[in-house]
Image 1: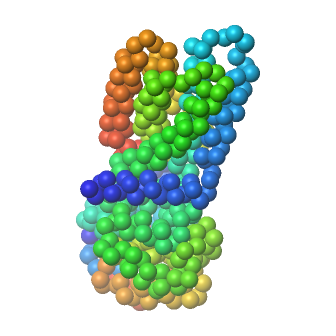
Image 2: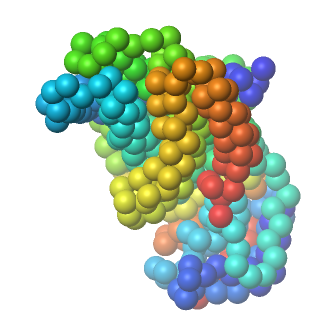
Image 3: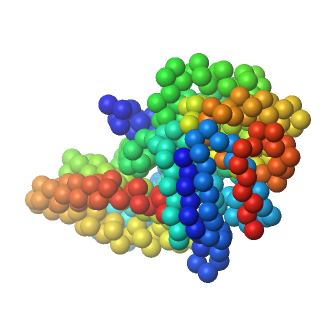
Length: 194
Length: 212
């Protein structure tokens, strides 16, 4: 599903990602590790199409609408409620019965009681849960997760563990993390960036 | 219909955000009225109405600039623009939705500014109203694209006026011409042509602005 040959990224003179090879098959659960500044976030943004590579080749065999992305920012509107954010994204992603799907995810990620509150009032952990709801809303074929456990409390992290276990083998997952042990039982492919 | 639905959903989102946060419109309204009051005292006694028409267009363009500077602020927070760019909708719908919402804001400004101008300076004719409507379309088309380009820059407050004001000159020429000329139809047609040309250019180029 993802094939990268010598893909690299520079911002001016600064190299954000060294030439990297990557092959992720459909249904794989790939874990990307590496020190700060090694290019994990850059690699995921390249795969998402949010950045263009400055060298090498990158093929991602999935439509934009079948891709879910969780980055360092939640990608939601702070003055919309959690439900309104999901409703907007559900509309743009053509999710059938989007209200029901949004409600189910909000319940699963324990945000139902806060569904009508503005996202600006959410804690960092709640925003991360909302970001996960947004990324899962359209049942993506390819899920890109950049440090998804960041800011989650114990309950939130366990919820995500269960969600990832459900997704493993069903969706293709590319997950960047500083804590590879946490997802080691699910991993089918590993990439260490230097 | 899906494209139109996306545009309307995105425009509705911007209007809802403004109704909640009230970040931009009240400031624009206050600015345009304040500017007209300052111009009222700055214009020498006995100055003719033709000069005053030029001041109206200055006030409208600088008020629009104030609004455009904040047009993409909700998308900058929490990187929501990335979320929109990742969505499978046509990316030009993002620009068009923002332009429609900005047009609503500028129309609200005109509803206040034109009576205020009539109060302080001179009556407003249909030619001026038509000129303002057409100029607002052009301002929204060009301004929202340039504001998106500027939003990616650290010096966005400096970049936007530098990009926008040169492209607003034809709008001022057309607007003032429509207001004071004996043949306003020529200037209104000029504004319509500007709107059509730049709307197509901005619609086609927005995708390249929001992707690397």
